Length: 355
Image 1 (cartoon, rainbow, N blue to C red):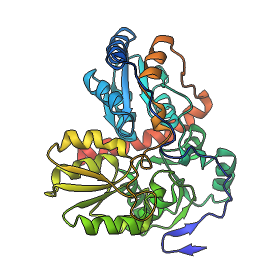
Image 2 (cartoon, rainbow, N blue to C red; image 1 turned 60 degrees about the vertical axis):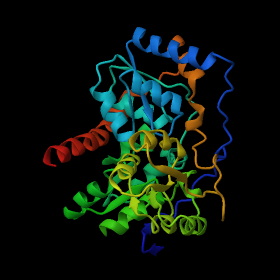
Image 3 (cartoon, rainbow, N blue to C red; image 1 turned 45 degrees about the horizontal axis):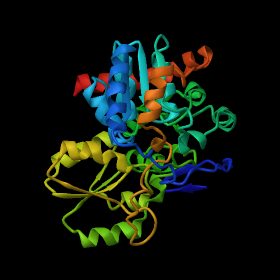
């Protein structure tokens, strides 16, 4: 089937039971426990020669610790680059499993730990290698471009790895060379990239369990109530939501927009974990969640990844104590995945030098 968003794959994806957004509750800490955990984590990071690399969507306490101990809070691209450049012998990745795998792909000599190995990603799960690799083999004429939200085996089959911040630039680069693209896994981000670039793209049909829930009609109604608000949208969202945006961009790009735009109020269509950094970047501004559960809804929990919510102070402390939850990638797969992942890092470094 061909639509304006590009050619769609007809692969039947396996049905996956996802935790519902908001279904993973943060621990209830006893009086004094939170401050005690934070102090112990900071001590253990120093003692273990470890650095904390946290995603914008994780708990605010984890982001705060990363900031205060010389780690980083960033999107998946900067997480990968930071870990690759930092001298610490242990990387503790607070996020979801593919982020830990990406760190290990780029840093085979380092120990990579995660607070939990149960933190998955619907995009990763929606692109299983057993289905994806034969699909790529059936389209040898296409350059395979995969989103970073994929497992090491999928990256190993890809020609390029990208994040949302560089997806348009990379696809434009490939289009200029006459390449046809096989894109995976996010169909909404793929459709957005295809619309912007006009490239010939064959799209895998997975989606993000959080961004797919944003509702266009409810967003329009909320915007009518707050006509002064700028709408910020991550491109993993449906086209009907993207079409209402004042800014479409990666997490880092959306945070920058809060500083650059004159608006005092923002409606934000991405995971609400980003509000911690948005409030740091623009403390005098107001941030509202885009509705994600139907008309009129402003559900506070629905716009938060249930797997990101699995990262918390207790299991971060525990993994630093025990050294458990270590990420391993088979060396043959790692070496092949490194080619496409390093290509992403090199592309960004070159672009920054030119800019």
